[in-house]
Amino acid sequence: MEDSAKPSPGIGAGAGNSLAVLAAAIALASAYGLSLGLRHLESKASHQQPTPETWFETPTPSSPALLSQGRALFLSSCAHCHGADATGDEGPDLHDVGVSDRYISNIITHGIKGEMPSFRKKLGHDEIARLTAYVRSLE
Ligand code: HEC
Image (cartoon, rainbow, N blue to C red; front, side, top):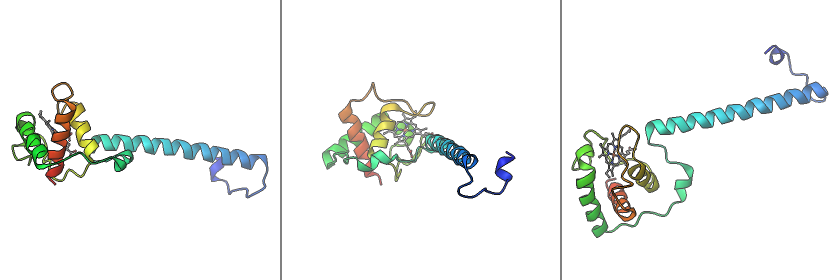
């Protein structure tokens, strides 16, 4: 880019200048798009990035009874990978995951490709909510 090496022509330099401004705006817009794309990839890689819309979610209902049901479900569906006490085995430690409830229930529902199965067909909405409350309670 030979053009960008030249000193800026300054304000009021005419049509050439507004073209340069336009070019800069396009460059900025595409750089922004690229960084959004990269951030998306990063968040997929770590599983640790809560997305902004989850900041406004209502908390998953919880009570001692719901938690003990969640724990029973955990022992039958999750413990062989995450450990009976959820401190991790083949799957990671689930204490202090630092992600939102919606994020946890999404992972349970959809699984993680090649890592963790989807439970969409095995568990109902209520069961996933109880499991989410249980994982949340591990913090
Ligand atoms: C086949 C083994 C397996 C089973 C069964 C399994 N998981 Fe996982 N789970 C994994 C693995 C492996 C990961 C980590 C994947 C990664 O980070 O790439 C994971 C990740 C997670 C995460 C995300 C943790 C984080 O820090 O982002 C949550 C939450 C989770 N599992 C909950 C559950 C729950 C609840 C169940 C039971 C309904 C369950 N898992 C069943 C293997 C399993």
